[in-house]
Length: 447
Image (tube, rainbow, N blue to C red):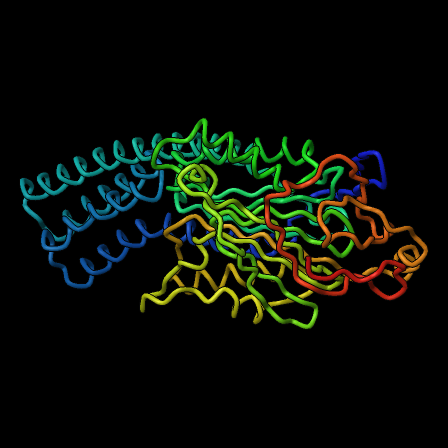
């Protein structure tokens, strides 16, 4: 059932979250794991059978019979205590039968069977302890997953006028949670999102990530200006972070049709993909310090205004992606990978990039990695007509946004008459046309 958040204007339509990436792949992996587990449980019996066949063929007696202990020992790694005892009992019965058949002296056969019984009991105990540890680990992972879902809430496949996809991999694989963060919320001032990276990784960084996400979600609804949202995050971190701690982050907003705002605080530059397929890094101008470290420098973050038309995409990511190295110590070329796997489905694009990234590093990442891809699909004919006849309105935060935008493409075009940017804060804008066919709004230019 669809949910609509009404913020006093045209509603943001949020469709139910669907995991369109992991469906068939997840089922295939589960089948493969089940087949492997079945083969592993049969391996101890197979080993016992091979030892018996060799003894029957060679008639060597005590030369081969001690190898029967390998069956219960291996069963301890693949099954429970009952399975271990069953394999041990089978090995003992077959060992006694073969020893009698081969004429093994009684004291030697007793020694072999006693050793087999001792190995079986020890393996059964090891199996019981392994099962207990697995249950504890499962409980810990369940708690970690619950914490991750509370911190990094699932993002719908469609938010407002955008298609969205997210891929996240924690370096602490057993905990399934790390120091990278992301959030995307529809607000009265348009869709706003953040992608950040806390210094460090694993559970120690989770508290700081939770703080940043919580402040962002609150400020994104309250503050008309995106720089004010970043200021709220900065003040909160300044009060709560340690001396050596910091967070890098990119905060972006879509205040109205065709306009994208980006504030980069010491983070990797987002990648802007035009409809033509051109990939451009959105470098901050000038560079700004990470939140929590602004007191150490006079630099302040700047707001960049970009044209964001139908078919354009924006990829936000963390350094766990771009700093991933292969065996030759070469970094993963994210821009090239994005251009190579670009498609109209953000989920498919990120799935291909993630698989290529894992292949690049040899199967496992050594740092937390997050990818968030935002795509503005082409408007339908009815939406285009609505834009053409709609009025131009929206927040007026800088000369770059003097031009209006249509309100008929599903985005929130809330009016802002009181929240303005700090006059002392530079606003950087890229020139471009934001009016699509049929729009009544005029083009915007460099601030």
